[in-house]
Length: 464
Image 1 (cartoon, rainbow, N blue to C red):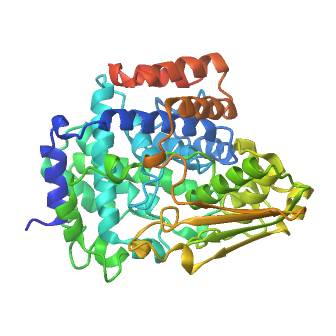
Image 2: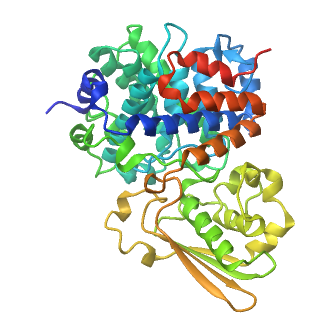
């Protein structure tokens, strides 16, 4: 049997556009539109100003645009900055079998290479799909043990998604593709301890940056081991656990295509994926029971085993911390009745009414929420078992709702209306004028017909 690195290189080279499953282009178009939106939103986030100062400090010059701004910079710096902006609000897509957020890492790397011949949307969709597939199957083969060790797969696995997409788009030959993966194996990085800080979104941007660096180095004649993923002293050995097995990825590429099965989730709410089901359950109960912050006596949220692993801020003080605080997310839903990008600002998190509400909220893991899930230990927190949210009002009424699938997951897919609303909200958060955002969304809604993606990108930058 061929090794994993060789198999990936063959898959990238040999896969035909016609091999894509039915519906893959439509699914890819939704993901890419969503990804453009969250990058624009990142311009209005906390990370934007430090990133702008970084560009100035490093004197990084070039012609590659930073979306939502008038800035241009070098390809690798643009990949890093756009990639970081796109994950800054934790509003980007989720691939639970990775587990991570491949969309921004892939798209930011690809956009940084659109400075030659025109690239059609069909070619970009094809490259994006291949990138999702390679990262997904490496993630499955690594198992959740990789994530449990403290690695953030968006950076440590997402780099291979971005690299596969680059190799596919630019038709890198098999030998150079294997070398590029060897280089990238020494660049994979990202630890979960940085969740709730600016460095978490940097994992996405750094993955884009390093994927492009590995691709360019390999194409320039640099060398690396051609079996760096599966070798005894390679990536799987260093980053994996006892159950990690590169043969699983070898056997799984394209069988089925991960973009369709199990599919990529698009987020309804701008925070950690594992909070989406509790937040959805809370809003269901609030609408059904009609309670408010004043009339609610008690709220309890029961999570499946492992569901609280990443929710590490019971008393957040910043918007970034609030994205990883289930107590805060539920309190905000009780108080406001909805969620927006403003919900996860420093101002929103530090409202006195939130602190009072959090005293009436209990969140905990419950074995019963995972007993009927045979794949419990192999799933990411946002997809394992189910979530229960129970509310009790001051007048003695009580109800419980059970949520198995978060809104935006493939079986509860966002509609184009949902995506349009999200895109326009994201663009406004980043400071793009409504008329410019409208033109951009209209072009993205017909993305498959675009003959030059760089012309579409110009609709999402500021012309001075």
